[in-house]
Length: 145
Image (cartoon, rainbow, N blue to C red; front, side, top):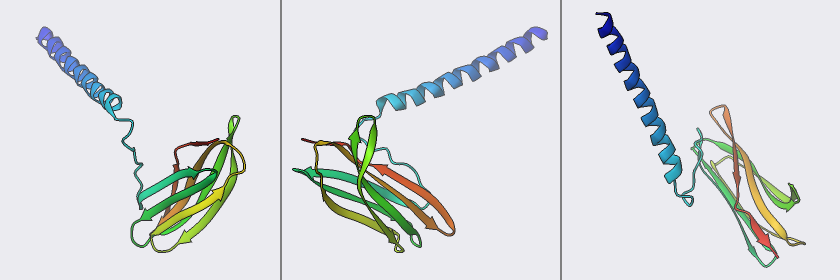
């Protein structure tokens, strides 16, 4: 009887260990096989989309971004253009907007005075039904000669 209990316990333990190792292998495989060009979008409660893009034509930067929220939401956001300086990012300029229509967008241009690496960061707050969430989206870095 004691041998049966030990064997049953050992079998259950072996099954649990094999299930844990299988699930971690599946998770690991998902991280390994994710295509680097597929955007990974965060999940928000009130926000359905937030985008941010930076392009250059010569030294003129075009900074675009938008936040789309669920109906009834209000949005306040700032789009900031940064230049990389050594080990930090230095603010070049920024634009701030608010919207009570659950949609907010930016389409701004700025001529930069020096070469370097630039990026934009869109930061905002979406409020709906008395609760707020923070949004932050960083563009791809662009280098200007």
